Image 1 (tube, rainbow, N blue to C red):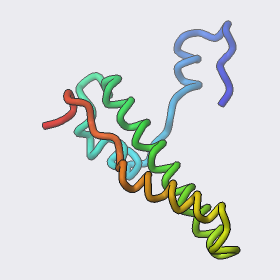
Image 2: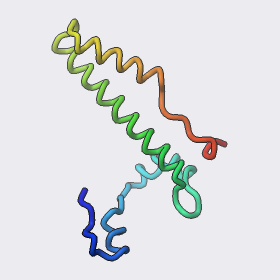
Image 3: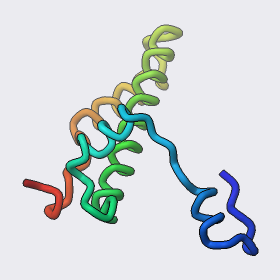
Length: 103
């Protein structure tokens, strides 16, 4: 990402930071729109979505690294560490929505 120049107008700067989502992305990220309100997405909902996405990314990366390490040498220390990380990530689960987003 590049930061818009300081001399850009506010609307040009805002346009430079737009995120384009597919309908499927929107549905998944906003839980079919339930995390949105009339003005868009509240900061606590946005925070929840970002934390969930980071958790999913890290979990997937650890699982992939573990599978690759286990194929090379199942008895290695790296495999053991990644297996432990994978277990911890599975036990902690995904972030829970803040109270303002719970039914």
